[in-house]
Every structure is written in C-alpha cells, then in structure tokens.
Length: 432
Length: 158
Image (cartoon, rainbow over all chains, first blue to last red; front, side, top):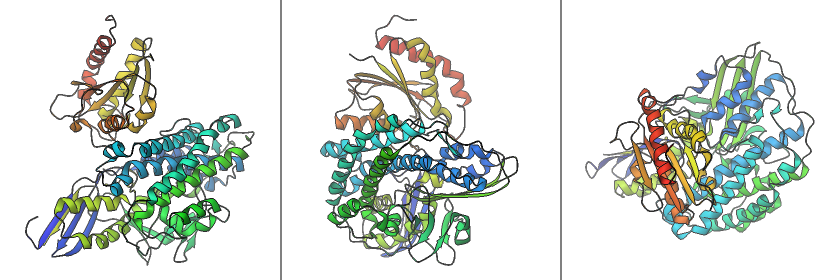
C-alpha cells in the first residue's frame, strides 16, 4: 500500500485456477476504479499452427490446447468438419460422443468443486489442508473424478488427451460389454454425486445475485452438450454458422487472451450457470427435485452458487452415461470413408466452462486455410472483471493480502481456464 | 508384497519437462524385470490413481530449484520427509507433484515408500524436445537414476 488514499494491488499469481494469470486493481479512496484480469500464459498460436494441416488432424491438434477439456476441442473441430462435409453420423456414434463429453464434464467439474472451489467456502488455503478435516468428502470427490476418467478412457483410449474420436466417428467403437463394465461404478457415482450436492448446499454463500445475459447451446430434446444452437437469455438465437455475426472478439492491451462481447450489447456469461438458466426445462425431474431440495430454483444468478450447478451437472452427466450405456448397440462401421471438399465448417459445443466455437476454411485438398477458435474463458473475461469490480467494492478496507485472497476466491467461481484462453493470475492493486 | 512401481512424470511438449518420461523409458529394458513401469504424462493428480494399492513407488520427474545445474539429481524419501514446495513448478498442471504427495499424505493414501528422483530442469517452453543442456546430460542422469534405484531396491549393479 503506497498511501491511505491510493493503492494498487497486484495478485501476481492466481492460485487454484487452470493455467497462469494475474489481476490488477486500481482503488481510489474506497472506490474500485479499474479491474484488469491479465492472462500471461504465452500466446499459443494454435490457429496459425493449424494452417496447412489436413482437416482430419484438427481434432487431435486442437485437443492439445487444454489437458482439462480436450474432448470439447475435439468435438467442436469434428462438428465443424462434419458440417463442411455434410456428414450425418450414426445416432449411436452421436450418443457415444455425448457420453465421452459427459466424462469430461465429470472430470473437470469434480476437480474444480473438490480441489479448487470447496476450500474457499470451508476456510482452507487448499485441498491438502481441507483433506485433513474433510477426508471423506475429498476421497469421494477423487473417486467421482476417477469414474469420469473411466468414461473418457473407455471411449477415448486414455483419460489424458484421448485419441479415439475422428471426423465421421471413432477409430474403434467399443463393444457393449466394455460399456456395461462401467455400470456399477456409475451407479455408485450417481448416489455419491447427490451426497456431494447436499454437502455443498451446507456452505455459506454470500448474497450476490447478478444480472447476466446468459449464452449457451440449446437443443429441443436434451440438455445441450455436444450439439445444439446458440441462445441468449435476452432472446438472441443463432446457429454456429452465424456465431461471428453476433459475437466479436477484441484485444485488450494487458492480456494475451482476446476478450469477447455480443455485438451492440457487450459482455455475457457462458458456462454451467448459463446452461442451467437457459436449459433448466430439459433437466430430468430427479435433477430438478434435487435442485429444489438445495434451494435452487429454475435459475441461478449467484456465481458463488455455481458449485451447486456444477454438482447438478455432474449428476446429470452420470445419469446420461448410464442411459447411453443401456441403450447402446454397436454400429457396423467405426467411421465412413470421407473425402475432402472446399468450404467453411462451423462447430460449437458446450465445454465444461461454456460454449467453444471453431471455424475452419478448408481447400479442395483438405488443407486448412484459416482456423478460428473462441474458447469459453475468453468469452467470460469481461463479465468476470465487471462482477469482481462490483463485488470487491465492499472490501476495499481490507489490507492488500486479504483483498488479494478475496479476489482469487471470487474468480474461482468462474473456474477460468487460462490454458484454453491462453491465453491467467498475479494481483496488482493501485490505490489512489 | 507388490512389485515396485516406477512412474515417469512430465509433459512431452514442454521442453525439459519431458526428462522424467525420457529417463523412465530408458530404464524400461533394464529394470522392467523387477519393477513395473508407468507413465503420468499429463495431470499429476492421476498419480493418486496410478499408485493405488502399491507399497513402493519411485517417481522420476523434472523439478526446478533454480539453485542447481541442469541435470542435477534431487533425491527425496517422500514417505518420511516433506519435499520443498519450491520444487513444485508453476505449470498448467492442476496440482504440482509436491501438492499431490501432500494431498495423499493428508488422505493417508501415500504408498508406504515413495522415492522422488527430481531432475533439475530449466527450459519449459511450449515445444517438442528438451533444451540442449538437458540433452547433453540425459545419458549420465539416466545412469545415475538407474544406479540409485538399483541401490534402493538392493539389486546388483548392471
């Protein structure tokens, strides 16, 4: 703190978020005048790296953008290429894709809930200290995550950077017996996920309801994950093909990650809360019932309660996986023969942290000429900054260390993935 | 008693972070007969699952103290000593190796004996291939790790 009226707080590294970033706060008197979320992982140039590569390579190359959500990258790339080639996949293949995506949601959400987010509510500096007093809950979280790993491993060949999905289908489709072998652990995980939601419901949540323009995929028949069209809580509705007509990325000088906004409207929210608020009607009665039991209505606008929404999505993902396993009949071919064609393909799927958009221009030899990727954390950055500015206004009297801790905990509500946007946290506070 | 488990840890695409994987691969032919070999190439939290049910685990990873030359071999008995937090590099890993060991200790799931061989690294850029300095010492580091493991497992020298 430089003097009593003016201060700059730097959180030089934000812990317990995916990747690397920093935060700078300007405070004049008691007012927060500026908040900058700085993502300082080096620019990663994946879009440039894809140029000249074969269209069939895009899923496995882009999967390397993130170790937490590779399925999301694979699926958005696959969807884009299949839209370009006008490929209609076997409905069973589509269901398997949904199931492996469920596995990724489970892995990502359970990790964030138990290892990164819960310590904030229970007053522990990290999951290691929390585990000493909440061993049962941490063990349960680890086992839930392991069950998610098993889904991804079964369908993807391995749990980290799975390699089995391809444009048109899979390299190798599983036998029904391989899927059925997962049933017992999924049954356990369904009960365990209900216990986890009840556990999280006991946390003390700050009263912090916000107004958001939520954006998520929506699908007429299911809670959208691997397909659907884009909808907004303010009435916008468009397909992936029109994404760039509605949403624009823009650069800010302090971050290596692009920000995004709705043209003419500004910031918006993607991720679990946006999905829940827009697609609550698609959830089964069992999930709605549990939501009601823990005090959630059909909408959730308190970012601290996003941990409850993640818990409900984990439960939903297990239920979906079980349904898919029980209905599975192995298709006759793993994937059709495909030939390249010139054109533009668009893909948009629901990564654990929100919608992930891909666009590719491909030449008649199948080489990628242009690639564009808009990850969820990039889209959420302006909203995180605005929310934090409002939230932290009540805490400016705190010393820099305590204020820094408050900011870090607040940012974890959004589970930002800096690796993906990487495009995340050190805190700098300027007090004037 | 289960066979010892040697786990190579690292990221093939982050410069010197690949050293633990490379050293472990080189040991497969030499120690594969008396120990099981596994790899943890991504999220190190997966160690919690990989070493489940094991009594004796040997970890080979890249660490950075910033105080030792590239290739220097750090050696810790994690079951009886705390590994300096300094060695847990800031990375895109969700938890570092030190945090995962401490989490397992808190949960009471740390294997009975856990040895960490930490190879001092320096360059962690997003690129294939280790730094020239690491490549230069990799063979001697591999021999040093092999000798240390043979001594630890009370094997005759090869």
